Image (cartoon, rainbow, N blue to C red; front, side, top):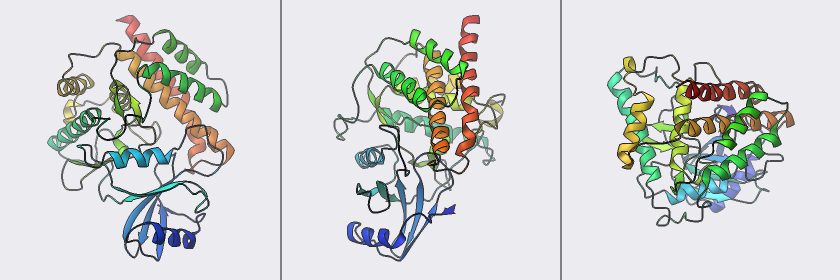
Length: 346
């Protein structure tokens, strides 16, 4: 972690003592090094340890970095089967630290960055951890959105149509140079958009291994992190996004995928097994148009990465290595085009 020298600690301490029950200074901040989007800090205070998550400073893309939405969904999920950190306070007054922020519980668990779970030396535990991720995703997609007060958290219906329009526009708004593979992928997605099947649920939007915190002593999830991209949407978007990450090779960015790795030798389910278990738990027979959902996930991630690169070019990215991530846009698009090519061969 690094220091948070840009924040006025005294002003923040006074504010939190006035607005957060039981909070007492003095306090210090340490910035978590992971993540490219909303800067996140460990708060060490006399009254305990907390986490502060803020919008990055500077001009932002429309609807991006909505920490107020994160706060809302975490608060709504407090008493559900979805494991989340408890939130304490949302500050919408940008005068306090220069941007909107919220404070939540500090969860002391483990986060893993290798899809192979190389830090774990037991196959049975790896199996249980992947099963826990599968169960947590099903729990999320089974939340009664009306009962938890999230029926207005997003638009109903035509999720992929709306999302595709959004990310095509976001990508163009962040484009630094023409990437033919991205243009080709975007065109394919537009011409292969499935008909809306009516499924609507709460979706995380960035459901992947490093956004999941496990207990340190057992294969249980204690918190799903980073809800910035959550909305009402289609459940297959989350599932395909996670499976996309597992398809990636080692060394592409900060996350290592499972491409070329014998999953059986590690106790990790195949993609087909993982999807089948999800379908069983959701009581559905199978998933049509799987290639579209995967390719959409690749395009969306590439567009997000391009946005990080754009912010870096403007000098307001939250991670010091953000200026390097733009190099991953084309490889992501090419991986999706490979899926399309393989489908045509089949």
